[in-house]
Length: 426
Image 1 (tube, rainbow, N blue to C red):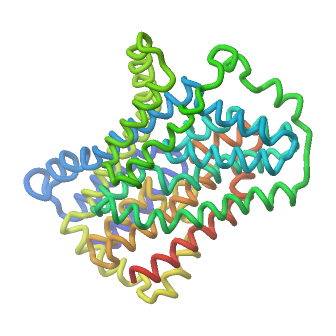
Image 2 (tube, one colour):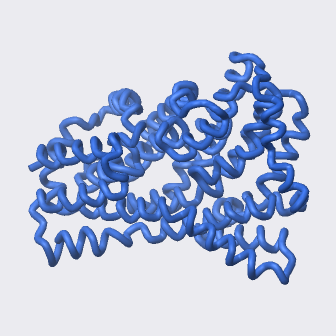
Image 3 (tube, rainbow, N blue to C red):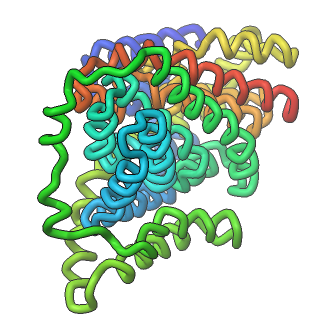
């Protein structure tokens, strides 16, 4: 039965890669197929309807709420001009020094990456940041990559990601936070190295300078002006509460929403802005929320007793236990998290992580190290991820060009994560 389940998983990956089915739909169909192959009854205990679908769908509810709050805060950063002000101040400070401008935009992207992910994060930092970088001569691919590397540097502190891994892997938040703190230096070092190396290696280009200057949405500044300096602290508020005071994730994010509102909005306008940005957040969060429903269903399926019994001997046979082999094998497998591959944690990779834990092959915290390290690669270099597609297209290059330029750097981030995992948890 284990071989049949693996063949079905391979078919699911093929359906996602060829875009025959959307990822969410493919994961749900895959979960139902795995449940039936594993011998699950239609109803009752450990069943298809009651366990996989009914219990699996809301399993990541806390993550979905966190995604919604992150999207809400991202909408507020956009509408109140906080994100735009941060980028403009950095660009004004950098002047015509390309490296300084790029490092400044990288810093803003990192801050934004702690609040929200995917295309909204790229847009918050990139709408002004990418044209500004290109205007001072930074190559287009480097400009797009700088935004993505910055978002990835902030990803270890993205609170919705903490909630996702905590719920999906059944780990306490402090455990997730502890590993993320260890992963952050690798992500930050790779991001800074990318800017320093790529801006110098590629030289200065001015092919899009005039177009860049006119592409910047100046009218927004005329309408809103710069946000107050104290409002610029908004992205830091949830982090201070969650890291410094160990406040729960959802209240920390709500505090960020309220701080952004109170520091930028007149009392008589608060009600309208709250509702308008909240409704806008639902539009942004809808796609990832659907994906998390599907992931919850898949996790419920692979944790069924029949599925675990079928897959355990096969997975154990190919899973290295020696720390050195662990690092070597999983580093070589990094490309499998690209193009929605089998190690993409927001796809079939979540199911594989569930099998590794349910079968007792690795401790849950070691699986956390694998999943978060692969996620650093996916978040930057996957040509099918929304933030990569948006950044590349906005800069006037292809996602594949961005992938080739950024992959060596994020590959080293994954290697660092694997080394920490092997040294600490194996």
